[in-house]
Length: 401
Ligand code: KDG
Ligand code: MG
Image 1 (cartoon, rainbow, N blue to C red):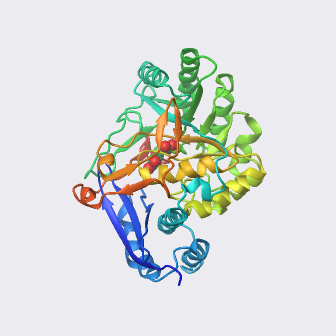
Image 2 (image 1 turned 90 degrees about the horizontal axis):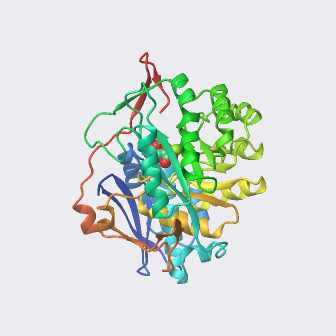
Image 3 (image 1 turned 45 degrees about the horizontal axis):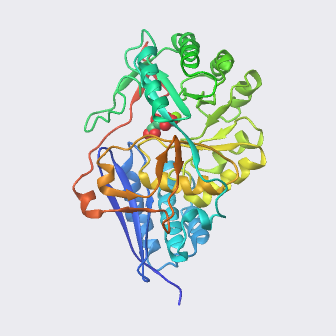
């Protein structure tokens, strides 16, 4: 008789920052976990899972991953959206974990086996000034990284997300407000990258994130002005609810473009991919429907010479990183993996077998995803509300963050 799901639990914990994890257990005594963290809206996904998906999971055959995905996606009637898709991602990831454990294989083997032994990754160098950012760059170079995302404070602006409070998560506070002036930024960014390129030489990969703050023509100007500094990619130059906006950017610059950390489904990037408007797709296991749906996106991207660059900020839990590394190891069109160190306390709650070595990420070899959650340790770090920032133009207009 086929195995059955007998229990599914939502674990909300805050070891340095909030993480939501779904754990599924089977009658055969196997268990699997999936990340369900939607930064700043964590409890919405926890409730969606607890109230709506857990009752549907009990009694299902854990081996029927595709059928379960379709059941939860089509069966909701209300398609797509970050809350729904993050919840589906958690179920999907946990079921792949179980299937790989049942097979006695690390997940990448089930996905077709290794296409590579290690994954190129990039980490963040954030500074309040160019010199400050370059000091952080120097530290990353010494640590062996081959690719670095560089962000710096723009003179005249008081508070820019990720730059003026690097690494800090302000628990229990209302959203912090950043300020933004596009003209100042467009004048400043080439200076930052001229200095960064001079500092690191030709071989180091440099990346930059514009965090959706530009209009399409401003994005085109930025791409053009950064061409002399040979960026690996320029990320989220403009919001992409309107995918066609990227046509204008693409026509005017050869700087490689990456987009997609906020996308939830293949439909969000269909035109970007099929019209070859981007070079890297940033969708992540946790927010874009799990391994099952991310593979569909990556396969479509592969047809058009577009590679992956999965979102990997520290608010995506170590469970997502484990899944991303098995995924990245197997697919033919892996590009790069974002890597941001998790808070120290996270390693008290999660134990994983992936590792960083010599500036590359390695997936583990234990069966499944290679990560477990210690529920007693998780209980020592109760949830605390924490919002993402908001952003305003200097005249007070609420702007893209
Ligand atoms: O929760 C939002 C963060 O993950 C995001 O702001 C980080 O832009 C980001 C990136 O590229 O890692
Ligand atoms: Mg980003």
